[in-house]
Amino acid sequence: MALSLRTLCFVSGYRFHNFLYPKLRLPYIQPTLSAKEVRDKARASSAVAGLFLAFLLALLAALATIEKKDVLDNVQPISCELAVIAAVGALLPYLALREQRKISAAHWEAKAWQEKEGRTVQERQQREKTLRTLHRALLALWFVLYIALFAAHRSEAALPRALALSGLLLVLGSLLFLISSVELYDTAGGLQKLENTEYHFHMASLASHCYLLGFSMGLVGFCLLLCIPHPRSGYYLSLGALVFLVAMTEAERELYNLGG
Image 1 (spheres, helix red, strand yellow):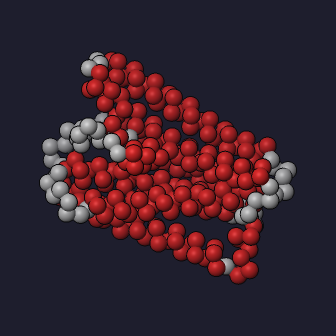
Image 2 (spheres, rainbow, N blue to C red):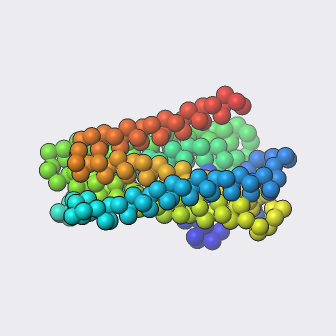
Image 3 (tube, rainbow, N blue to C red):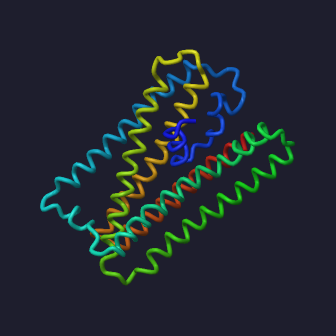
């Protein structure tokens, strides 16, 4: 698999990455799924992703042109230590959101491993359980570290500036994911390989991963930008948004399991 595709699958936590090499294939049998249906769905989703991308660009434009540049002046860290805090403050929410995507990937990773190694169903289920436990432990770790980041520096007067910079970094990262999402949705809804269902499925599915991760990072980043006028409120809002996003994914996963 090309390095660029591997990288995109890794950073977005794409759950079907093991089905991309050495030959495109669907992760499950869907005899009624056609390439046309996937293209139609991708075109509709592209419009939604494009709207949020436009909103994010408008937000960045507003931050760049606001009178007296109050926002941009305040997100500049005053020391190397606070710059590191800003980077960690952006990295931990991203890792938590990505890890939540990887919990769903455990099933498909175990299935691909079973197919490749010729393992039994029992061995696959045990591997899936182990992977889910690992991803949930990492998710809990990122949350604990994110809480500790604020608690350990709550007396630091310049901390709001570092957290606001974290928010700006998350918004910029969100912008990259959304651009990738719109591009992939456009390709998935295009006319290339018209009857190749696997090709359009993976394009649309990878676009969906990029969109959800970009949307989530943008929401958390926007909350952290509120740390400039209201340090505690901005941080607690970002933590609440992070918990909400993770909880919604868990609810979606539970509904899927009930349906099965």
